[in-house]
Each structure stands twice: as C-alpha cells, then as structure tokens.
Length: 247
Length: 228
Image (cartoon, rainbow over all chains, first blue to last red; front, side, top):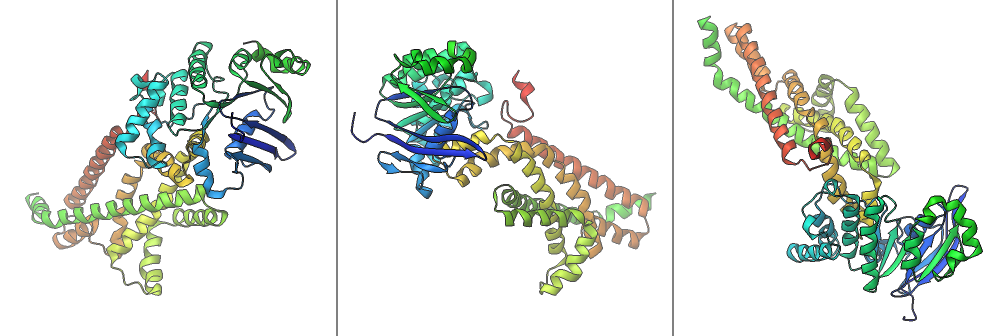
C-alpha cells in the first residue's frame, strides 16, 4: 500500500432541507482495499457514493483522488469521474444501445478512441464479465444479472482506479445476485479497489477488507469484517436492517 | 362530363406543379419545425430560467393563434415592418415551420421527461459532459419515443398548408381555384384536389411507418409485446 490514498474523503456534509443526509463523513481508501458500507436504508450510503464522484454536489467537505481535490475542480470533474467507475442499483444501461455499444460509447465519446480499438476494448471487458455472447443484445433482452454485468463492464472499460458499487445486487433475485457477486469477487481478486454499498451482510463480511457501519448520516463504527458483525453497535443496528442482514 | 374530365387532364401539368409546391412547403416546414422544435425543447428542459420562460411564451404565442392570422400578421405586417422582402412562399414556410416547432417541441418534451434520470447519471459517471449525454443518449431515445406522436404532425401540416392560398402561394388549392375560375368546373376539380390530398396523406404516413419500423429497438418504447 502506498502512502497517498487513492481516495480520501474529508468531512463530507450533505443535507436536503432540514434533513442531514451526511454529517461530516471521513475515510480513506488505499490501493487494493475493499471498503463496504452497511447500515439501514436512508442513512446516506448512496448519497455518500454520489458525493464522491460529484453526481451529487456535497454542501461542504473535500474529496481527494490521488491527492488532488475534486469537489471544486469545475470542468475537470469529467476527467476525474473516468477514474471512478460507478455501478448503479438499477443498472442504468442505455436502453437504445446493444450491450457492446453500451460499453464502447464512452470510449468513443470521452476517450476519443477509434471505432476498431473501442470495439476490441468493449468486447474484452464483456468477456471479463462473461457477457461476450450477449454483445448484440439490447438491455431489454437481458436478465437483471446480465444487465448488471454489462454495466460493470461499461465502468471497467474506462480503466478506473476505484470502483463504486451502489447496492449492485439489491434489484436482483437471489440466483442473479450470485452471478454479479461472482464478477465482483473476480475483480477484487485482480486487485481492483472497491467501495461498495450493500445490504448483503454475508457478502460484505467475505468481500470487505474493512466494513463501515453507517447510521443517520454518520459512520458509527468501522473495522475488519471479523469484528463488525459482533460489535454492540452493529447488533443494535441490525434490528433496523430487517431481513437484509441475514441474507 | 367529357368536358369536365378534359378540364382536369388539360390542366394536369399545372396542378401537378402545385402538388410539388405543396410538398415542398410541407417538407420545409416540417424540417424547420423539427430543428427549431428540438432547440426549443432542449431550452425548455435544460435551459436557464430565462430561456425556459422564452420557450413558454413562444409556444403559447404560436399555438394560440390561427394559421391564417399568423400568415397575415407576418406577410402584411411584421416582415414588411422589419424590412424583410420575403416572397409569399418563404413567409408560408416560415410561419408553418415556426408554428410546427411549437407543437413538435411539446411532443419531444414529453418524451424527454419520460426518460429515466438514471441513464443521464450513468453517462455523467463515465465522464461524459452534459451535452454529450444529451446528444448520445437523451436525443436518440426521446426522438424514437416521439415518433408515434410526431407522425401526427405530417397530416396536420399537409392540411394546414392549403391556408397559404390566402397570401397567393401557388400551391395545390390555389392552382385548383385558378383552373376552376377559368373552366367553371368546380365539382371535378375540387374532387381531384381532395383525392390528391388524401393520396399525399396516405403516402406520407406510409413513409413515417417505414421509418418507425426501421428505427425500432427491441424492448424499447411501445413494442415490449414483441419481445415476449
């Protein structure tokens, strides 16, 4: 692990009206680490991810990517975002494009690659997630698990340094969850740095290098996966997480 | 009877030229309406408050006035006042086009607003600019979703185009009336005029249906049932 964290979040705050969604959240991520955020719904986990890549503007606080501050970076944010791949709960594939064109679109428009290299790169990424044989299918023709794998390939194609997963399996059946988790584990094994928001406790404990427990916009506890599930704070919170915690 | 038919056949060439003028008038108006309609929509959906207000007033103005009033207003008053010396055909194209833009913008707006916000977020998360996302994702999808509503614009413009008669554009109805005043055969000539309009309408709708089929995407828009 190098000294400068890939990502450093400092005193991030966000509120909507009277509701404080994030209350001075701070943490850092080093290369290869897998940070998993758990906690009841509505505690600001997804907002935290969106404030990291500035899809939502935080009210105050700082985010450093490789030591560079990005909250106030203006138009340069488009370059920074490429370094932070994002996977959404609802996949958010581009409905009018086939799987392979979903993956290559940003390569053509943002990275300005030529058609041939972009197609090769897109096919390579689809192979990585086991979706090469569905390259010419439209999103509506894919199962949820397949769509999510394509969206992972789409994010990976930009060669990100860190991947942000926003409840990547919440919209999926148990059977389909497994195939997405499998892809994520492979990625992790290859050394990809990951920040994951999830309700899947079993997955979290086996995947994470560190688990963060969030409640009402704050990190109330964090530690290695061997400790968090038995901590008093977590046991207390667990009740609020309902059935999710046991899956 | 024979005289009636010869009245049509003798002036067939003249009337056909009128068909050409009508089609050109409709085609150009649709095109202007399409381009301006997209610009208006983007202004209304993504623009700052001032632009949104302008589009609101624009749409209210052009949808609120009868075609014939707009034509008179631009042909006899506004354009001369502004020093534009535009031929009647140009005025008709401008007025019908700008009016169509108001209607088309509202068709596109509905489609854009029906798209999920998630795709825009995904595009931005990949490093695309707002404009790149609009061009590569929002427009291709919303234009497809607009097609069924948009296909109504052609017959509306086609039938509206005959109003250009009042400022003397030599389109189909104008020429038909001229031939009638020369030959005194209103029945056969107005009937012919009507049949031609119906045929133009039918032909245009066939083309639009063809385009709709061509740009169709499995599972996207109104054709989910075909995927089952």
